[in-house]
Length: 382
Image (cartoon, rainbow, N blue to C red):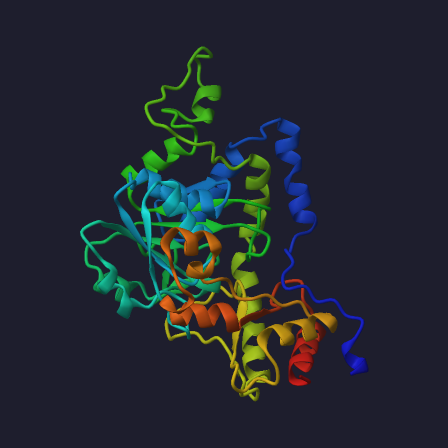
């Protein structure tokens, strides 16, 4: 075991460098630090790549999701369907607008919402379905739409910049999409998010809401000939604007997106080949026609076959310098949701098992070939 010591392979590291550093010079030199021309350029690039008419940068994916629900005027008395296995923000934003999150179990192979279980959860109060493209693999949008005809689909594409479903880009598949630029994502602006939509009315309302509900943008106000002009406020909005410092970094990062995903896909294939002999470890797969964004490489530990528990495996790998994380959590097993809605662990058994048995192993654009080989050796030596 001496060959499995004195290493430190992080679960994720942002691939940033001198280009991102240099990109900050212009906004710092001009003094335009809040939302401005760099954010606008980032939005244009993002919209073009994801085949949508509108892209609106925000402070995070959470605020992007909240903005979409607010722009749809979803509120008290309404229901929004949410997968039971996802990051807590997906459900929290439904509570933010006063609506009720209705949980649906997930497919344990894809980790995404199970379309076969959606129809039974649709009621007269259902206003939307949030389909999460978990870990970068797009949810089966056509099957979800067939299960709930006429119900708007919102894409939680936090992990899925650059991903595709049946050769269609994520973010263009439903009424609107929300993306994240957190440092664990393929491209990052530190914190940050993006709303995408082809619905011009929704985009107009979301644009106002992200800027306190203002009737005109900061650019219009500052660049126009009437210095006395102030916006009218007819909507109760928020301050969800991305800074131009972040936008400048986003422009540089986003230009690398496809190269980053292609590199991750090659190493994901390496993992799938090198770890296939481990009968106790189920590996992620990609359906024909999907493009996985590979935000994370999430496996499932078989508790009946594994040499030790999932948590013990993670502790052993940590001691050998390999960082791991649970895939994410089961919403119904979190204290807030247990206490507020009376959920039990067995209410959504697939989400429960994913919560207990998933494990993400390192996959990012700052790993070397030796790093990947080391991770494989560490897993195979258990």
